[in-house]
Length: 452
Image (cartoon, rainbow, N blue to C red; front, side, top):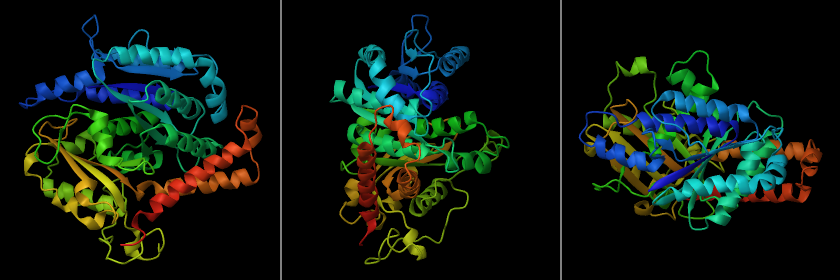
């Protein structure tokens, strides 16, 4: 089954281009499985071009033409794939980092044009799995227009799955009103999206610096890491503990494993190993070592293997969770609702992942047989002989979410910049509704590990 990728705003278009770059080259190897793997990957992400060059199943949207023009030309210059000739929509006016401008103004003005492009791509799919929308939370076009487009997708394709890939802004601040934009985006997407897969810029920046050893880090470097992690989830894999056939429905399989309750839609991602190409040449990996590190990353909520807190242990029955007693070392434990482990590479069937099936890792009311799933493929991923990824519906995003909420509340209490949003159609009552929605999300996730 195929995905239609909707790239929104500067961040969404740049990360989307890197995602297609990864999947266009992944799978070229001498492994016996790779030809079948490659064909499924191609059907999932590309259609056949008349010139023989694969065409990305994508719609590109931005309110300014520069990023789209650069994205389209960069894809064409790769020689491996390209975007469709009629797959992009842009204007010559931005959203001014104002969520309300993107959501209330640009969205309704350009709804038909954008949705016509989406329909064209959807109709090219023999079997449509759903939509992957890619956007930032900080600015105006990606967050505001992206939210509006997601609502349109839900209205026009009520039975299709929607996964939003969201890039969380730097904590130090990219945009003065980024916390408003973040809260407004998340609260609205919670009503229309099936799941929100979030990457934090601060975490990805540290991966680039500490693991990939990049000295002068650019947004291109950050986008490559996000694309690598995302492709490690969306590329073909065999579902189930003893499955031999690749899963045919990428979004259905993914969300069926992880989003088991409508109150819990926030997904985090941890991937191992991650390193520079130079270091990779001199490194060897074992499944016991990779899985030991990944399990500890999950428990300690460390999204990179450098600096894992090894003092975090499985909590004892009856202890309160981290949400209530943060001063206790055990209380920093990250409680999960559901986890999906994806293993790729040599000798993958020998990997023993039973350590992820301990009930203590999960909230007490979620049986481990339903809470944990595993996918495998012996095809190596993106140059790594062995690699492991875990997608987690857990408390892993509580800290950045709580921080954004507190900062947004502080600004709203003094009515800072609120008039800029009201001017474009967002009332103060809608702000309050968004705060209420996200406070309920925070409460729901905080209570996952309240009593054991």
